[in-house]
Length: 249
Ligand SMILES: Nc1ncnc2c1ncn2[C@@H]1O[C@H](COP(=O)(O)OP(=O)(O)OP(=O)(O)O)[C@@H](O)[C@H]1O
Image (cartoon, rainbow, N blue to C red; front, side, top):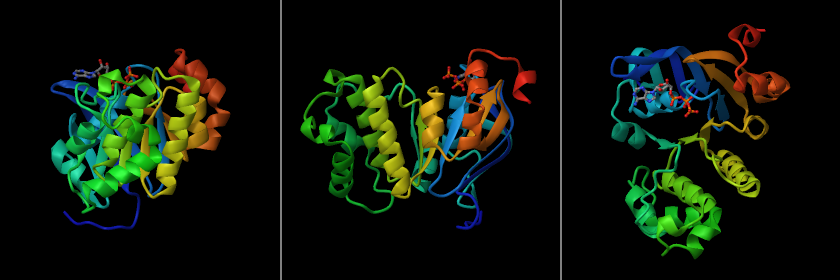
């Protein structure tokens, strides 16, 4: 296992994966460059979450490779993957509902790259001042937007080089969604690469550098986000259930 810093940060080549004997992804190629925001779009059941689960070691690869910073991480356990600098912020947030903001942040600090808990907490509070205001509040008492901010704040406590966000805008009011997307842009400007699964096609493509469209476990379309945005009518149509033939145009 050699490690190099040249080339993409994350390279997925010929990946097929799933859960037990259930195959979901088939022959997927995806790359994320340093400082890039890569968007993954697709209808329900397309395999977007399974892609993130495959990278974080939750879903098992049956073929292909996942390489991070030149190191083959295929088949690594989730805790090993986190320690290498990949953090998965799952759909539905999955914060500890009964714990306070502060306790949630403490639980997520793994001391990966040597920054102290206090330094990382200060960074999270700078990004999300509401978390500082509500540091002693129990998570379940907070709004959906605040809980999403806590979920991202928690993910940052592991000092990721690559942050994977699964539908961070889900169920949130438009004003909060814009706030979350501004934070995502800030994170990428601060050197964190982002792999973003989103149903909000328009905002995701405005924010992203490159995008992939998944359906039935395969990459159907990919390209620079701006070019993909020109396909947005197609994507919207697609998200409503267009045929594969249309997508191959
Ligand atoms: N733990 C699991 N075990 C078996 N099959 C699963 C499991 N999780 C998901 N699947 C199946 O894998 C397929 C892809 O699901 P996945 O959650 O990756 O899609 P998605 O694109 O993220 O969809 P959504 O937008 O609804 O979250 C679906 O057919 C789903 O039923």
